[in-house]
Length: 330
Image 1 (cartoon, helix red, strand yellow):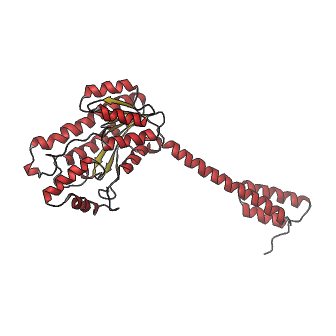
Image 2 (tube, rainbow, N blue to C red):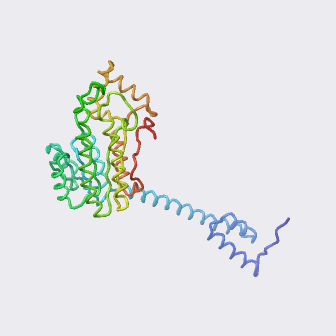
Image 3 (cartoon, one colour):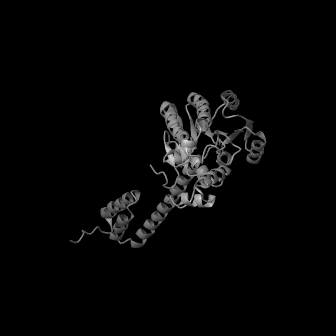
C-alpha cells in the first residue's frame, strides 16, 4: 500500500515539519528522517538528524562520564574519620593507607607507638597515632573521646598463634583453646561497642571486622580460632540488627589466609609441621581448593574495606562479604 503524498507546500509541509520536530524531541531519529524525505528535503533532513544524533551521542557520553564520576565520588571517604586498631600490623597498616588514599582522616592505634608514628607521618593528611591497648576498655573510650566523632571503626589486631594452632583439640589445653575468645573476640566486642555508642548518637557509621575462611568451614588443627571467627561474624550481625535502624552498619570481610603477612608464615608453618609437609606444600594444598587458584591479597581486602565503608557500600550491613574465591561460598 502506497503512503499518501504529503506534498511540498502549504499546510501539509507545516504539519509534517511539526511532526519532524516532535520525532526529534523524542529522539526517534529514523522516523524524523523518513518524514523529511517525504518533503523532498533529504539533504536538510540528513543534516538535522545527523546533528541530532551527534548531540545525542555527546549527551550519552556526558551522562556516562557523570555516572562514573558519581560512582567514584560515592567511594570517597572525604570528611570521615576512621579508627584502626592494630594499625601497626600488615592488615591494619594496609587498611590505613587505603582509607587515607580515599580521603579519610585516619586514627592509628596499637600497643607500639613508634611504627604508628612513622605510618602517620607517611600518610599525612591529619593522620594521628596513639598508644591504645585494644583489650583495655578504658583506654579505648578515652581515645575515642579525643576524636570527637568516628565514622569507621576497624579492628585489625592479631594474636600469636603458636600454642593455639597446629595442635589437635584432644591435645589442646582449655586455656589455649579459650585464648582467642578471651583476647580476639573480647577486643572486637570492646572496640565495636565503643564505636557503636558514638555512631548511634550521630546516626551514622560503619563497624568492619575481618575473619578468615575457617569461620565457615571445618579445618583441622585450628584450635580456638574457628569458634572465635564464627562468634565474631555472629556478633557483627547482632550489632547490625540492634543499631542499623539508627544508621550504624556492622559487617564482616572474610578472606583466605593472607600470605603477605607474617602471621600466615607462622600459621602455615605450624600446620605444615603438624602433618609432615613443607610450608609451601601446605599453601599449595589450600590454593587447590580456591576457585581462582590463589589466596587473597592485602590489596583485595583493602579495596573491599574502602567500598563497604563508603556511601557506595551503604546497602551492606549485618552480613559477611565472602572474598575467599569460592572456598567458603555460602
